[in-house]
Image 1 (cartoon, rainbow, N blue to C red):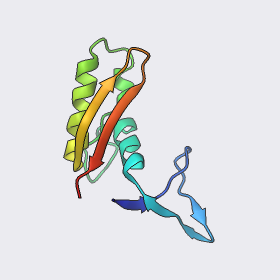
Image 2 (cartoon, helix red, strand yellow; image 1 turned 45 degrees about the horizontal axis):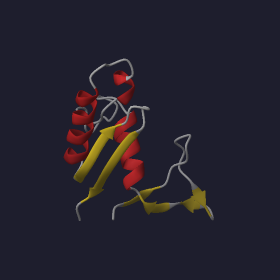
Image 3 (cartoon, rainbow, N blue to C red; image 1 turned 180 degrees about the vertical axis):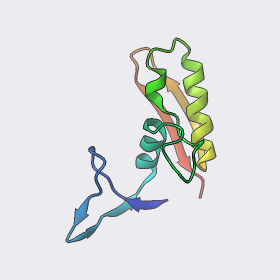
Length: 97
């Protein structure tokens, strides 16, 4: 399991007992991959989905394909990416360590 800094919903690192909190980070990595746009990560300018670009898109398969591609490029094994009719995203992807 990957370990990394833990962030709150506002994107700030959590601090506990005067030090950064470190914990399992798969969900945090997935969230960042979905929300960040290409070019937002200086070290990896072609990474990320930029899910807000798909808000008015009428092709959910393009979004699902992009999510799968980016998760796999980050080292995850993807078993499910499905956009439900109510707009919820089912993403089952884990790092293959």
